[in-house]
Image 1 (cartoon, rainbow, N blue to C red):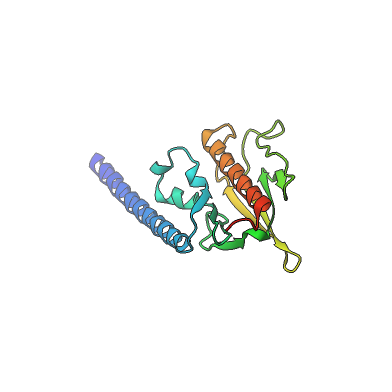
Image 2: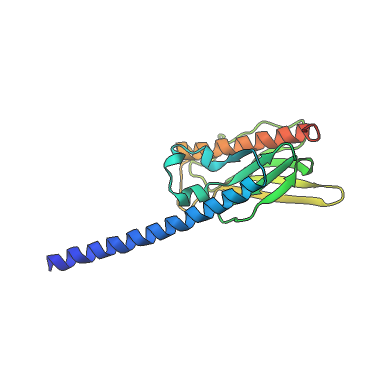
Length: 195
């Protein structure tokens, strides 16, 4: 009876390993394909969640793909590319001069807004914030008088479980959000001056 139990556990472990390997290989292929797309566009700078996470080099391909969410920049062409969330496979290109405003949305509430030169400070994790995160997004609004407004929501963190806002992992995601806002505000202030 003991041998049957041991053999059953070994078979189950083998099946789980094969499933994990296949799942990991799928994400590796998806990540490589996405990075090939973005690199073919000529973007030279990126601000994505994975670059802010502690020990990101040790994460498996699934996490790397899921947390390669953020913005890419091509200053000579004055273009920003977006990957909106962990399920996105496409790239959205936005000319710098179309960016109108940017804000961080934490737990469903806007915590900062921006538009033009007189932008207010970024406040994340203030006294009113809850201890457990319900999500962290960055909203970028684009448009002009001819095309109207269009908003894009970058979902930097969409909890499957729960995470405490004091966790270093979450604080890293908050820093990524602040960096995206800083970059967008810089672009709005200097749009048209890049060459």
